[in-house]
Amino acid sequence: MSESDTTPTALRTPIVAVLGHVDHGKTSLLDTIRGSAVSEGEAGAITQHIGATAVPLETISDMAGSLVDPEDFDLPGLLFIDTPGHHSFSTLRSRGGALADIAIVVVDVNDGFQPQTVEAIEILKRTGTPFVVAANKIDTTPGWNPQEGAPIQQTYEAQSSRARSMLDENLYEIIGDLSDNGFSADLYWRVQNFQKNVGVVPSSAMTSEGIPDLLAVLMGLSQRYMKEEMQIDVTGPGAGTVLEVKEERGFGTTLDVVLYDGSIKEGETIVVGGKNDPIVTEVRALLRPRPNAEIRTEKRFERVDEVTAASGVKIAAPDLEDAMAGAPVRVVRDRPVDEVIAEVKRELAEIEVETAEEGVVVKADTLGSLEAMANALDEAEVPILRAEVGDVAPRDVAVASTANEEKHKVILAFNVSVLKNAQEELDKAGVKLFDDDVIYQLVEEYEAYVDEMQRAQQENVLDKIIRPCRFRVLEDHVFRQSNPAVVGVEVMSGTLKNNQYVVKWEGNEPTRVGQLNGIQEQGEDVSEARAGKRVSVAIDGPTVGRQIDEGDELWIMLPEKHAKILEQELSSDIPADELEALQSYLDKHRRRDPFWGK
Ligand code: GDP
Image 1 (spheres, rainbow, N blue to C red):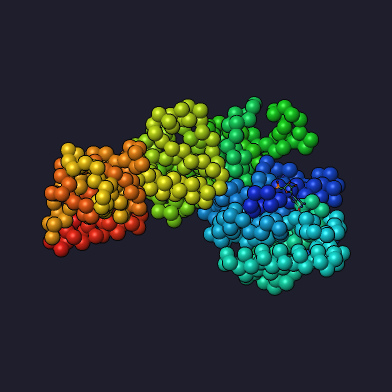
Image 2: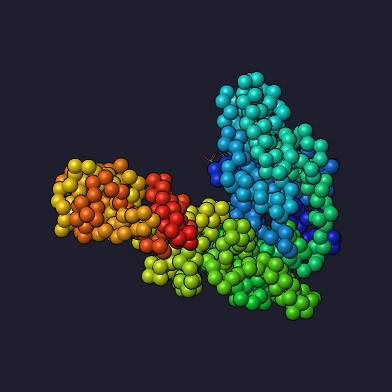
């Protein structure tokens, strides 16, 4: 970052983000690139920014050896965002698009595509961000013969044919998965046109094998396809995105910002997207990490007068408490401040989430992730009552508890904390909290909860409803004639339950013969008996030999309304034999009255 640069236009450094599934090696890969940059170049060749690391072209060329000839390039190098993960990727937006110009999707060669890999690819597709795939951990291929820091072709030649073919198999699997996700891909050295095809670069963060290739591909891609976009006016008013809002001892609330256009100077007026209105404030200090930083916060940073894109910088200024991660930052410089406020508002409006009168409460750590959550919920047809950036606070619980439907009395929290007093409110208000740091998992957990809730509700209805049952009085099993009649029965279909009314069909007419007043199975009182069981029952009302007789077929009496609910709403929730009993019962009634139970 040439603070002394005087040419108004220059090519800025492309911004690189690293994405991929957890544990596939994102952090390690970044560390390896940074580490080898430090050991290759003289100290200071790489610049530590706030939230990002700049690796200059010279260092890249040293690391990549013959794969990168600095003569072929005029871009100044690459700026790697330090926090890997698609989460921070979606945070980093610029003027409606992705802030990162290019991305590395890290895939463990043995593990292949995993849920977060797919999620990362979807985000890249949506934002139209070019990417390469680092097929990482090639050193774990059985029988691997590591060639520390070597380009991939050279490593390949040193492997046994068995190791090579095992790696190939895994690589083709990844290429297949990319194709399943809508990207035609190939091993990077076979790709002719990187705008049409995704290049796969075998790599190892452990042995640095393939790292030269990865850097060469990133550099080549940027140079070939992004040169135009990298042309910026370095003296223009700065434009950037808030990466994080952070409390720093000695500085108060500060913003970690990635500047992607123009420059910013100490003392300048800036406009920042806030939770309510845009914040207009003055830059008190611009901070960079101090090399060999001391532990004491005040000494961790050094002040700079001016910063030029692309750059990561910490801004200390008053009134930043309401600033939001993911929000735009603009330097006003020589423009009417209202114009800049309007610009920030326009940009925020683009990210605004559509809310409804009824729905769930969503909290996320950044505007970008809030938007991604809203998209995912929209796809799942879940309405949103309120969506905000920030930790879960008591106020959110209060809002969630106003939802009409039980299933909407929830808070979906993505990558945020729950304030202690909010935690206490949750139980009191009967609001359920879901939190996760993978969006699709969060949505899935919520959907599973709604399914379970609906199932429980149906079960509840089923509990309250009288259920059909057909049973038969057994021959030679009359234990008592009447008051009550006690007879042995066999349950033919459905479940016999105590206290229900009993009917018998005489021709087309159902006659109520009495009420069940006890069921015994092998001498023990039971509350019910399933189909197939033989039990003795006590029936208040009839006398055996008059209203009922040995061999009679009897039914539990179904109220018409219950029969209707069972047939129309619950028929898929009851067992087959019970459904059979229901059908026969309805048929009998409908012979007399075709509209019975309809
Ligand atoms: P992240 O969650 O994607 O950032 O993954 P990490 O970088 O934290 O790596 C997860 C684990 O995989 C760590 O134990 C790393 O040491 C290991 N790992 C990462 N890259 C490689 C690699 O290329 N080879 C081997 N053998 N292990 C690796």
